[in-house]
Image 1 (cartoon, rainbow, N blue to C red):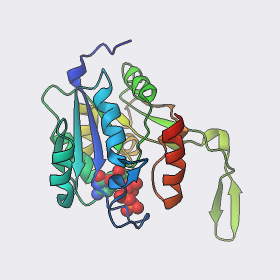
Image 2 (tube, rainbow, N blue to C red):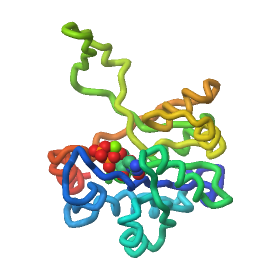
Image 3 (cartoon, rainbow, N blue to C red):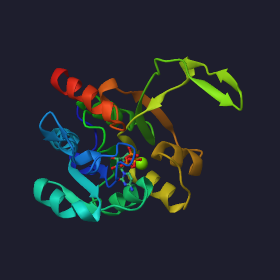
Image 4 (cartoon, rainbow, N blue to C red):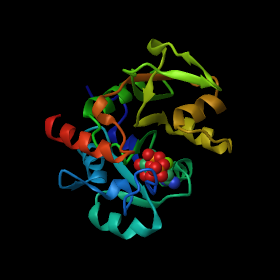
Length: 224
Ligand code: CTP
Ligand code: MG
């Protein structure tokens, strides 16, 4: 079912201005090939194809502005900043005047199911913000010096993107001048009354961080 709000009001912001230092490849990971296509192109296509997304903004580094502008002519391309949060901020500034909802997505997560986008938009009918999250499969321990503590796995989640908000809420959070590692954390920190809740993510929405992630994603790309 379509969202009550019109498609023009939903803007995807794909942040692609990182350098991929942990992967250590010669170019940033979003510009590497995955099964013969640039990693960035997968999520861009998913958002462009989604019937409820009206606009796709790509945020990228100065060295890639020309490349991205040429290869993604259906997107609005803007310059990123030194940290992910700065890049998100630049994306928020570039939203069209019609935008009411923003979906902030990591370019380093190529395989985002349309179902996740559907569920996020549905959740925003009653929530201020949402993001996909999955349950960890391994035991997770917290280290305290030489000691450790097993954490309650049922209460833990691995958070993915897109992180989705009513635009006014995320703008207010950014205006606080505070920082956090993701948008859900920033909004929770700065607007305690905000209604935030996670939806079910997907294993294939994993992020490319280390070299072996690309091998696993190539498998997913052929099977999902
Ligand atoms: N990102 C961004 N602007 C930055 C830093 C990160 O747009 N200044 C983007 C990345 O391009 C990526 C997403 O945020 O799509 C998630 O960040 P991460 O996985 O940490 O990517 P990098 O910062 O590129 O990698 P690393 O931390 O290993 O350097
Ligand atoms: Mg990073």
